[in-house]
Length: 264
Image 1 (cartoon, helix red, strand yellow):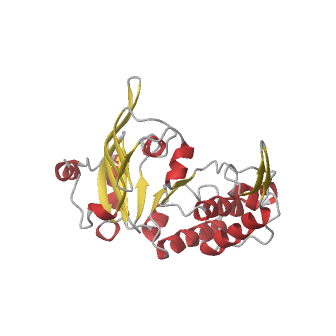
Image 2: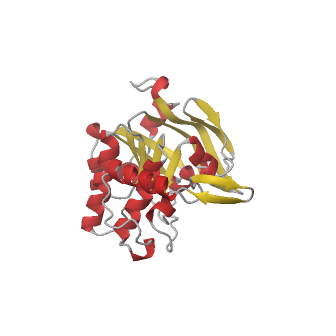
Image 3: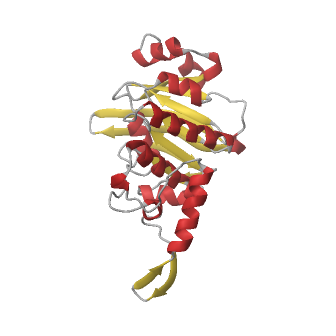
């Protein structure tokens, strides 16, 4: 992996030789990746390039075939997404994983409810505390939800996405991952989500953004990492590249040999 001006002491997540094989299919091969404190990094690549496979390995959805994941300075091997969440990695997937019949606080604390009292197998939930924490999370991410008691089913696509993003702020995540967060949204809703990402940047929170939207990537991130056929073929500083250069790596017009030489 290439040397960066930033030191390993502020590295939030690092993968070394991360690899995933499905039988004879090499979906991910030798991925060396770093993200530092406060940094926003985009992962780009064509469909089937290995982006989603990479995310599934680092979030505990799947176990890698080989390689190492280092999070917050410690080697980790998450057995499932809940372990990753408990460690501080919050992921907003395209599917959102929200409960349509529940309101905003119930969704934010789903599976991590705050409890006032426990009586053996029975518990009394602390709805007041969960509502207050929800308001704090919405304020932190600049998300505007007029009625917290409104069920997710009755919200727009943009509001649903914002609720999913606000959930990451509720639990003070050390790293946020967003997988195509605006793919199904209109112009205004996309702008709202992008403003949330900018707010996270201002607050110094690291973020990995998986996106096909070139304009969005150049507006929001510091670095662009390109995957092709299961391998990382480029690691580019946004200010030192352009859209044509990125597309060349995505399509294979540039092979990534230059990056391979410096990253070995």
